[in-house]
Image 1 (tube, rainbow, N blue to C red):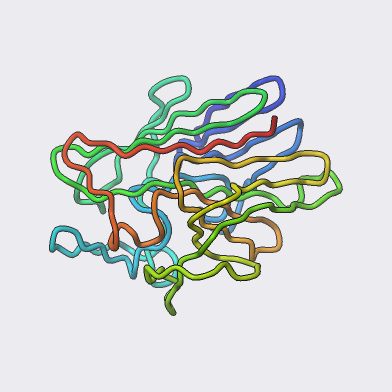
Image 2: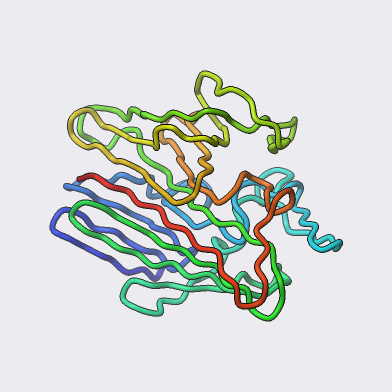
Length: 257
């Protein structure tokens, strides 16, 4: 698998061109991410584009036309098409890809990475080409509960509401109070952005310009904390619509100070 590394005095990051994935993030000698899994959606930190989360039964309806995509998790098509592509490195810290044969609207997506002694930041931009397209962006990082320092992960996070979901785990559009965990929920109205701590050894603050966060704390070995430009299936329910040449951009920053 082709990849490249970014490094600083305290940290290193490996970018895998297959899926455009952050495959490893090591801070002060500690690997923070799950680096392998039973399927591609279960490890690293991968980009979600041109939709994020579950696409209802793989069906996209746009401008009165239905488009069917292959299911990737049960009945749904999860997490977009960009993670199924091999990306091209276009600079020291930049990669890009299209969306493959299953996506009928063309367009492209670019990621740019920044690593310092205090943080890792990824910027992502999706660009429409010669036709209008619906768009959504996000990232799906998997953080290890145990990074080998003797203390397991704890999460600080607070939000005003979550999206109610139906029997297919899709948001209905209604907002309801935040339940007790464990969670597999989409949060809105965040009052404290996520902070992960492994005792006194390492504290990781997560920030993004996106205002939707999917938080998945059910697995025993890891948690997934995903900033997104909208809720799952919003590409159907409330999409960003890009006209030819228009872009949708976002960023995610992991800061350890």
